[in-house]
Length: 554
Ligand code: GLN
Image (tube, rainbow, N blue to C red; front, top):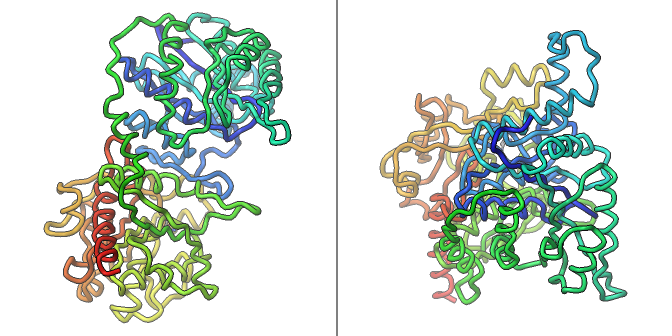
C-alpha cells in the first residue's frame, strides 16, 4: 500500500481557504531538500474538472502548465519555484481525474464484475496515484496538499485515503494542518477556537494532526501556542507560528526559526543529514526585499481582474513572480501597474502608459479587451516603450504590425473574427477538428516544445543560446501564409519550431525599437527565484534604460 521506505506528509487546511497552504508546503519541501532529502510535492484538487484548463482565471486564478502539458493549479507553480525543479503530471490530481480513471477501468471490466464504489475503489485509485508520483520522482518524502478545507464534502475521500495509509504505516505518515487564527478587530485578541474546532472536525474523520501551522496577522504568543497544543492534543513546539510577512519567499526562513524541518525529520524517523543551508535563497530574499533601490514601472495590461467588488491579480501570478526574480538580480524594485485593457476601449487614453518603463500584455482568450490591448501595442511600438507580449500578447503584436505597418487592413485572429480579410492568426488543421466537436479540455497546444533562435536577434542575445525549450498553452498560431509579407514589412521571426513551420517569437529589429518582442509560449512558467528567466531579465534591462533616460530628462 505504501512505497517501501517512503515517507508521506499530508497537509490539510483548517478554518478557511486561501491562507497559504501551498506556500507552507513549498517551504517545507525546500527545507527538506536543503537537508539532502529528495522531495516531491503533490497537489490534490477536489473539484470535478479533470484539469484546471477549463476554468476561468477569475474563478480559480492562473492555470499553470507543466512540461507534460497538464494544465494545473497555480500552487504547482509555487512548488516548482521553491523546489527549483520541474514537476510531472503524476504530481497533480483532481477528483475529476480520479473518477475518470475509475470509470474507464470499470468500462473495460477492470474490476472483474465487482460493484464499483467510492470506498474502496476511488480511495485506492487516490493512493495509487500518490504512490505513482513518489515512484516517478524516486523521492524519499512526498508532501501532499489536500485542497480545500477540513469539513468540505469534496475532499473527504482524499482525507480518508490518507487516514488508511497512516493506519497501515503509522511511522511513515504524518498530518499537518495549516489553520487560521483570526484577530477580530472588535476584540483585538487572537482567537484559537476556530482552529480547535477544525482539529476536532479532522479528528471526527479519524485523523490527528501532528503539527499545526498557525497562520495569522501576527506571531503567536506562548499562551496561544499552549492553548492550541492542549486543546488539540499536540506538543507545544509542534504549533508553528506563521504570521503575515512581506514576502512569501521568507516563509521557509521563518519556519527555520521554529525548527520545523528538524521536527518533521524526527517525527518521520528519518536519518539526520547534513544541512546544506539556504545561502542562495537568503541572498535572493535579501535582494527581493531590498528597499533602497531604483524603481521601474511596469504596466500589465490584462482583463482577468474583476471578481465581485474585488480586484485580484492571481490570474497573472507567474508573470508577476518572473518580473520579481529578474528585478531582484538587476537590483531594481518593480512597481507593477495593473491596467484593465477594457479601459482603453472605454475612453481612457493610452497616454497614461507614458509614465511606464515597460509594458507587458500577458496571455488571454476571447474578445473582451482585445482592441484595448492592440491600442497598447501600438502605443508601445510608436513611443518605443519596451514591450513584452506573452502568447496572446505576441499574437496581438503581430496583428497590430499587420494592420498598421504591413497595411493589411482588418487583419485579425480567427479566434475573434472568422471572416477577417487577413487571418494573420489562425487555427492549425488539428485544432479545427477539436473545435468542430467542442473538444476543449486539454486539447490546446500544451506543454514544452523546442524552438530554434535566429542569430543576431534580440531573442538570441537574451537567451545566449540557439535552442530553447518553453511551455505553451494556445490554440491559434501565426498563419504561415502571411510570414513573407510580414517579414518584408520589417517584422522579425526570431524563434521558430525546429521544422520552421511555427513562429515562436516575433520581434522588431534593435535599430527600430529598444525592445519589442512577443513569444507564442509562456516564458513565465519557467522563471525561478534562483534561475530568473533570460527574456524577463532582458526586458527589464531595457525598461531600466528607459527609466534612466526618463529620470535624466525630468
Ligand atoms: N487565445 C490565444 C490562443 O488560443 C492565446 C492563448 C494564450 O494567451 N495563452 O492561441
